[in-house]
View: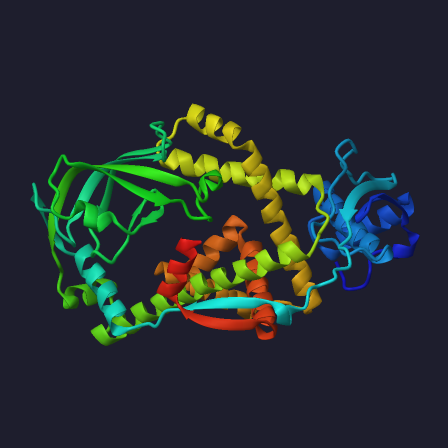
Length: 435
């Protein structure tokens, strides 16, 4: 449609009532004459003028001007009341629409200069890059089956199960998973959990041996109801192979890199990008934990319900990937209903605080910043940025990338005001573990 308004917003009838603090209902009626004029201008513009398109565009037009008229600044956006009729454009009829919408509260922000933040620091060394290069050589290496005396760098296939400490009930099971034995100081991933004592438990073992690992589930785990829980992971070794590493030249050729020096730079960039993103997540968590304690934000019940659905989908997908039956998933969800409710409230509040923080600092994002955000993600995943961008756009995840970019800028602004103390990453981990 042309840049001029298709109809005068003043001709639209609107009434507003407060359902509860920060929660409003707006009834909208576009008179028949104005609705017809809107549709005629749509057809004249050459754009899609189907009933569905006309309904969508007229709905968006009404909502935009309703928010402007009543000076509402929603966090969550408008929703259709549960028992109202969905709007449909019909020729020669007035256009009727009812929405419920929140209005962001005025926030009494705490003094950000009172916030004390710990920034964990880990220097990127040649040793770290050498280690990653060696991993690439092992990935491309030749494998020879072995029966016993497993060593660092060997590849093992195991049956693994996970249960809560003190319980024999198996929550997750993978009948066959393959991993490489790290150095004593390295970590292995089982069920997407980083295990730091895997190497010392498996080195020297033989095929058929069984051992148990004890660990604590991280906060951001795929099944959030297990976060912070002490668990036992049973490992049964099914087979093992010794790897003869590929040469550096073979790895360089495999990646199509012009030289070893350039490949090492690419590895360094990818590792630095991952470290930066991990550090950013740690800093953001400290900030939002602080704000969550200091700032109260009213959140509609339907928002909590939507977050609960997202959590349930996450649990369902993750548990199925780890071999759990539908009955096991249902039982897990039922047993942890209270945890899921608390988690949904926590996630919703963080989103609300992030949105309000961006408004407080008048933070916006640009297309170039979105491209940069996707570029960092691509470098971390070892993919071409353009391929990842197309995938993100096609899946509808671009809005989440935009939210991440906005939050990153908000966190940066808060850090400029807060007191930030740097600490060696290993020391920081030790302190967190003691707590």
